[in-house]
Length: 366
Image (cartoon, rainbow, N blue to C red):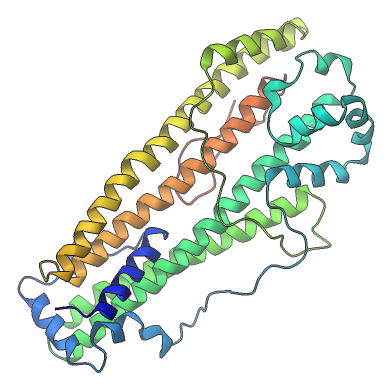
C-alpha cells in the first residue's frame, strides 16, 4: 500500500501537471503488463521509494532552473492599468480624454465600451485614436498574461517529464527496462524541454510587445502581471443587442465607412460568439471530464491497478487540455476587445484565428 507521503507526492505531481503544458509521452512508453508491478517493487527498494523518484530533482538540479526572481517595478494587475499607461504615452490624447469626461474614460479603460454614447465618435476629435490605443493595449496585456501563465505550466510539466526520465533510468539500472524503452522516455523529456523553451520565448516576446506599446522599453525589462487571465463572463452578450448597437454606430458614419463597418461587425461578432463558446466548452466540458479521469487514475494507481506510466500519460492529457483552455480564454478576451472596438466604428487590422493552445493567436486579416 502506498504511504500517505507517497500519495501526497503523487497528487502534487498531478496538480502541477493539471496546470502545465503537453508532455510528449505516449502510451508506447509503457512496458507490457505485468512489468510495471516489478518496476514499482524495484523502485520501492530505494531508500524513499517513489518519493525518491518524484523529488529526484532536489538532488539532481536541472540545467534549466526555473526563474523564481520576482518582477519588481511597475505592476499592471488589470488591463485597465495597461490602457491608462498607454494613454499617458500618447500625450496628444489628453485633450479628447478631457472632453470625454471621467465616467466615459473609465468605461473605455475598463472595457465597457458598449455603454458609451454611439455619437461620441462624431463629436470628439481623435476619438478613433484613443480607442485604437486602448484596444491594442488591452490585447497586448491579455497575450502577455496568457503567455506567462502557460510558461509556468510548461515548467511544471518539464519537472514531471524529468521525473519520468529518472524513473526510466532507474528501471534500466535494476533490469526492468531496456535501453530502447528508456530512450523513448528521454525523447519525451527532450520534447517537454523544447516546449518549455518555446513557452519562455513566447512570454518574453509578449512582454516585449506590451512594454513597447506602453512606452516602457527603456525603463523596464518586464512588468508585474497577474498569475492568470480574468474569468470568462457567465453569459455572452446577446447578439440582438450587439446588432442594435452596431446599427446605432453605423448611423453616425459616412456611407463608405458604414458599409465597411457592417462587414467588420459580422466578422467581429462571429469571432466573439465562437470564442466564448469554445472557451466555455474547454473549461466546463473538456477540463471537467479530464479532472474526473485524472482523479480516477489516481485512485486506480494508489490501488495498484494502474502503473506510473498510466498516471504520467493522463498527466499529459490533462496538461494539454489546460493549455488549450488558457489559449481559448485568451482568444475570447481578444475577440471581445475587437468586437467592442468595431462597435465604436473601429477597424482592427485583423481578427483572432481561434487556434487556441500555447501559441499566441495568429490573426486572420480581413
